[in-house]
Image (cartoon, rainbow, N blue to C red; front, side, top):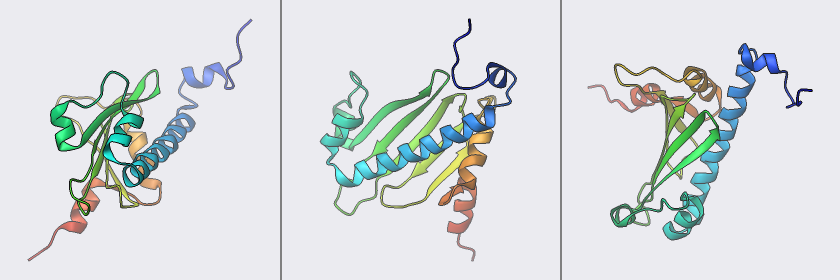
Length: 162
C-alpha cells in the first residue's frame, strides 16, 4: 500500500504541480525575508547571530567586526538559500540582506534593505551556468508580488540622465 502524502504522486513526477510548489515556496521565502528584516530592526547584532546562525557555523572574528552573518535556509531537500546579512555600523547606517538560491532555485538573487518594504530580485548566472529548474518561475512569482521589483528595473529608476 502506498503512503498518502497529500498530493497525487503523478502530479510531481510529470511537473503538473510545480507551479503550486513554486508559488508556495515564493510566499514562504517572502515571509522569511520579512522575518529577517524585522529581526535586524528589533535585535542587536549578537541577539540576531544567536537566533539566525546555523549551529557550528557562527561568524568568525572578521565577520563579527564587519557585522555580517551568513546562514543557510533549507526550503526542501533540493532547494536552499544562502543568506548574507550585513548589519549597519552606525545607528543611522544602512544594512542589507542578500539571498542566493541553490538547487532548484539556483540563480535567484534577492536583495533588500531592512528598513525598506521593497526587495529586488534577479536571475544572476555566470556565462556557463545553468539556472535551477524553478529559478525563472521564482523570479516571475516575486515580480508579481507587491513591493518586489526586478533588479534591472530598479537600476533604471536610479539612473540620472544628463
